[in-house]
Amino acid sequence: MSKLSTNHLPLTTLRSSTHVPININNILDDSLLIEILQRLPCISVLQAKSVCKHWFSLLSDPHFLQTFVRYHDQHQLPFTLIYEFHLWHRHLTTNLHHILHIISKHDIFQSRGFHLDFLPCFQSWESHPIWLVGSYNDLLVCCHLKMSLLQGVYYICNPLTKQWLALPPAPGHHRLADTAIGFITSEKSVSQNSFKLVQIPELDSCPCNGYQFKVNMFCSEVGEWRKFEVTSPRSFARTWQFRPDSVVFKNKFHWLVNSKNIVVFDPSSEFNKGECQILDLPTELNSDIGVCLGYCQDYLKVCQITRGCLDCVLVVWKLQDYVTGNWDLEGKISLHVMVFVENVQLFEFRFSAMEVLAFHPSDVGILYMRFDNQIVICNVGRRTLKVVGEYLQDSSFSVGTCGVFLLMHPCWPSRIPSLPVLNLNKSIMSSP
Amino acid sequence: MASSSSSSLSRVVVKSSDNNLFVVNKKVASQSQLLKQCIDNMEEKGTNDVILIPLSNVTSNILTLVLEYCEKHADFADDDNNNQELKQWDHEFLKKFDYATLNSLTMAADYMVTKSLLNLCCQFIADSIKDLTVQQIRQIFDIKNDFTPQEEADIKNENAWAFR
Image (cartoon, rainbow over all chains, first blue to last red; front, side, top):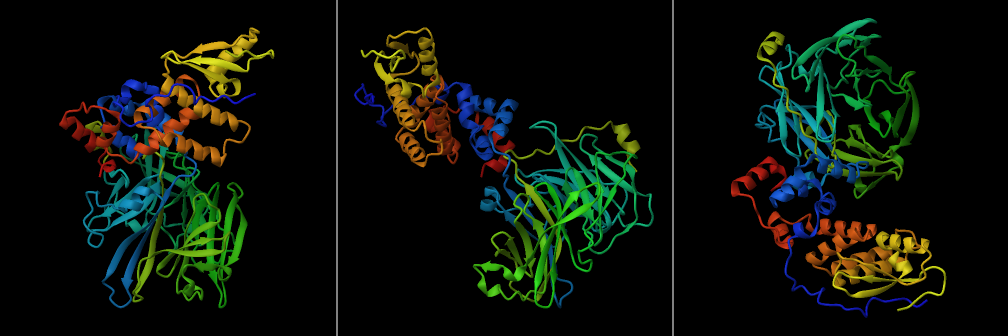
């Protein structure tokens, strides 16, 4: 059969550019316009709202947001790691600097940088530091300490959209360093979410089985702090390794309280019925050196770098079973078999400090580490190490890790829910 | 007009809104679900005549382009959809057109139920406008700004982070 060509058919001037422009709104019906506009990135959609009234109403419709979210791939989300640390001069004890170092896969943070200067409490990092205390999805929780250091104000913010919310003061006065904090959001629909902030003022040590400790919880749907008690099934002692922020995994908070135990708390088991769970770390871990707790894909993981006189070994364990608390050794690798790409001079491993900062949230083979003053990506599969951030050249400064926070960026940034307006009498009564 | 000697049709005639006739072979026409449906219906009835399908919404200019696309894709119909050569061809194909033509092509692809062309056009338009300013978008799509300055400022303020 001969192939039929359409070329011989009447062809007018359609490929010339001398056409008369025709309003797209008159050519394409709304469903086709949406078909096009849903493919834009979020930032372009928000800009396109100001094109004309018709686009504004199309793009403001909750139906559009549903279509948009359905269209965009939510599996490989870009993420941002925030490394919060202290720098101090080895000889001048007064000169303490509080610094954030950002590693971001989000194009807006890459092009514009990452800033928290939109927060009303922001003055400078040196004078009144804002401490990061939690993160979930793309929302971050900061604590601004007043002079006394005992009373802090919590801010929930979205660093991308610069939306923020200050919470009413938590009941009581507690040192932030003694407080365990957990933050989680949940989505009711695409445009509606809620959050919970949990504060355990003295997750200090639990002397005996059946010990109860106080929990303050702020739930955005309630709009005020509520107190309740949680029972610990076993005793544990908290040590210097403790960091107030939790690892949120499978909707539960996980605090590494010492070199042997993880306290697990499910914030949905509210009000007096609460019981926490204690998980034991693998006994094979060296309890004298730091452990990194995190998750990757569907597993809670811990890892550690142990140093012998000739070698540095990275071990990674994953939790197989929540109920029995069984851990599996996932990998053990000598860092000396790995190659520094681009910085060959570092191969001798003459570092005074080496620690794992975080797991890649979805790539099993990738870990973020700190070697002295450098942040290094460790690719276990390829056996490579790559320096991604160097924050100090001057060796007279020391670095102290405060926390590592992960932000996952969905295709449409999360809104911070507004709080319910409380009945005046009620809020007076419930205030401490 | 040609007629088939076999029991099924090999060609159809498609009529544009401005009354031009296009002879299209079946494999090419089948890239459009609308045309394919018409052909299947006729074949079920056992018609051996060449059938005429009028497309009241598509001008001959645009129909020519849709058929050019269908012809190319019919050639690759047995390949997997990830053919690099075809992807390259798709991109070169759309690159030639102005926005008015792209919009009409999108509408025609939707009307003729040519899903892959529809996706291609929408993605192409979205990619080409995503970095444009609001003013540039109005210009290329011939859209009149019907906001008052205050209204426009309010919308920008509401999502200030997106504007810079």
